Amino acid sequence: MTDLHTLQTTLLSAINTANDLTALDAVRVEALGKKGSVTALFNTLGSLPAEDRKAQGAVFNTLKEAITTALNTRKETLEAAALTAQLAAEAVDVSLPPLPLPKGTLHPITRVMEEVTAIFARQGFTVEVGPDIEDDFHNFTALNIPPEHPARQMHDTFYLEATSENGASQLLRTHTSPVQIRTLKEKQPPLRMLAMGRTFRCDSDMTHTPMFHQIEGLVIEEGVHFGHLKGTIENFLAEFFEIDDLKVRFRPSFFPFTEPSAEVDIGCKKSKESLQIGIGDDWLEILGCGMVHPNVLKAAGVDPATHQGFAFGMGVERLAMLKYGIPDLRAFFASDLRWLRHYGF
Ligand code: DAH
Image 1: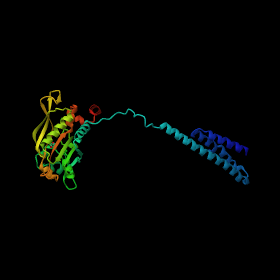
Image 2: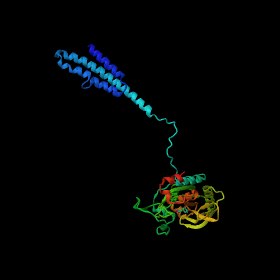
Image 3: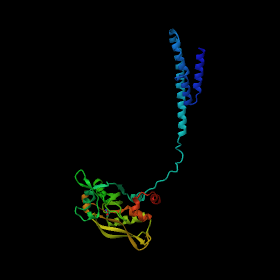
Image 4: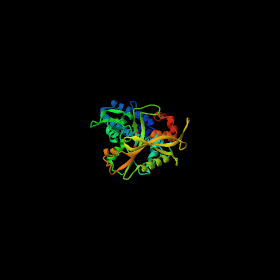
C-alpha cells in the first residue's frame, strides 16, 4: 500500500510539474503506456489468488483514475496556456501605421471622368448609366439614325450574334448617346445629365482602339437655347484645362441627333515636337455638340413642342492625352505598370 501511495504521489507531482504538453505526454506513457508503471500493476493481478483479484483490481483502478484525471486537468491547463501564448504572439496592433505597401494609382481615364463629373456636378448635372451591350433602337434608331442611314457605317459597329428577348439585334454601344434616350424615357425634364463609360468600334490603329471611353452630356429644360450650350461648353473647357482665357471655336457640323450641330475646337500651338493648349493660332477639335433633334425627343417620349435642349459628346482618352501630355493612345490599355505609375494619380 505504501508503494502505491508513493507511486501515486510521485506521478501526480510529475504531472503537475510537467511544463509543456510533450513533457506531460511523457509522464502519461511512463504511467499508463504499455510498459508504464500503473499498467505493470494490472499485469500482477493474474498471479493473485482469485478471491483477492477483485479488491486489488479496484484499488489499482482508483489509482489509475486519479492519474487519468490529473493528466486531463493538467492537459487543459497547458493547452489554455499555449493558446494564450499563441494569441499574444500573433496579436496585431491595429493602431499601428500601415506597412509601406506598394501604392496603386488612379488610371488617367478614371481621373478625367472624375474631373469632368466634378465640374458639371457644380451645375446640377447628375451621372446616369446605360449598358455596354445595347440594342439597335437605343444606339441608332432613337438617335435619328434609321436603318440604312449612312452614319451607321461610320460607326464600325460590333454586332452580337444573339438578339435580345424581343428579337432586336444587339451590339456593343458605339457611343454614349443611347444613355440620353434611356434616361429621358425614365426621368421627366427638366434634366441635366452626364453619362460616361466604355464605347466600342471595330477599329484599331495608332489613333484608334476597339474599346475607348466617351462622356455625354444632355440638358433638357424649357427655354434652353444655343447660347446656353455655348456658355456651358466654354465654361467647361476653361475649367477642365485650367486656362481662364482659353480660346474656343464653334464650327458648323453634322450629327443626326442634333440640329443645328457643331464641332468645338480649342486654341493651341502645334509644332513638330509639341502641342501647347491655350496659346498660339492653331485649332484642335475637342468635342461634338448641338441642339437635340426633335426626332430624338419624340423617340424618348418627350414633346418637342414644349421641350428642347442641347447635347454634347467627347472622347475621354483625347481629353486625358491633351491635359496630361500622354503621347500614345494604345498605352492606355496595355496595363504596363511603369506607364501606370508614371501617368497614374
Ligand atoms: N455620339 C457622337 C459620337 O460618338 C458624339 C456626340 C456628338 C454626342 C454630338 C453628342 C452630340 O451628344 O451632341 O461621335
